[in-house]
Figure: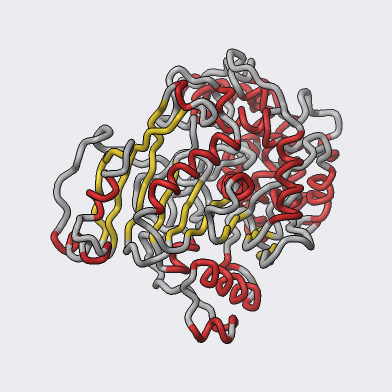
Length: 489
């Protein structure tokens, strides 16, 4: 999922951004309004403030508390082992946020797979069940990175074990049902958590989660790009992408000037030329990942007659020329490392480019500093895929019809129980339950309510009556968005 970041879409299930972290670990903030404090002791049934109960957990410390009407919102650090197999090998601080509503409500465990947002927000399942939400920053994304960083300890089992320890610590307070959720790499993360700790959660809602079972076999993506959208739209996109390689010399001159003006460097990729081509090669993929078919009229209809500036502007708007600079890559080293060691990464042919490409679809190794060793482990994704087919119970996968990542998806098999795969018509990488066709929407919502243990009697009798239990909140339910253009997850 390599992509540059643009904030022009509000997609409800994608990764969170890093907001202001406020004070350092252990430092409390100013007192919240009394209205937010009222009832927090009563609703946990102990006579103790919920913050005190949370901070009584060994290894838990407060970064800050932010007010939000109807909730308590905490930004926390939790002490985790660097290596869960050898806890004596040292610890690191992992950042967590907790949107507390009431201990009598279910809890949703949200994982974005990247940094965690430090601004109050609610995932779709949290709104559906009207519950609490715990959000976890993925290990090795700063500041949740051990120092020094032993990159061999960045794998899906270690990350799932981080979640398991957080769940175990908080389950004593939040005793009702728990659901895991996440979008994109976060949906993968929720799946891996369920695979390694299947007894923890009561259900999983995974959005747009790729499943690259065999890393070297990516023909499903090629078939996707042959048929997605309409021929007219595909031709427009292919034409602009091709023209950007035909005009490599003048556009790279512009790129060199752009980099100099912004202080960008290219040590990781090795050259401006490789970075330029990587941005261009992302263009078609990134369009379908984040745009809709209806947006195609923004793409130049006749690329050959477009100006250099028009080609540049279209590529920059969709792919982002800052993506493969050292400065654009640095924050996402953990993702590229995982893509090149366990998760896999697509390699698509793009035959409309002919022989214009010098490097092809470049692998994750290109985007990780050479000082970090990498070796791919082909058995890891096969293991997860086999587990999902045979053991996935109470799992919902939601995909977008026009999202490239849905070309290789998770598919619970005949031996799984109460699990579903649903597709949003015309949807992109922001696909969610709300976008499903009416029957699927109701079925999915009813399942989520049932797994959380809060399905009203009317819904139990007739799933078609299922609706979210909490009203939409324009601030709380609008995620901070990064268009992680072809960060490839």
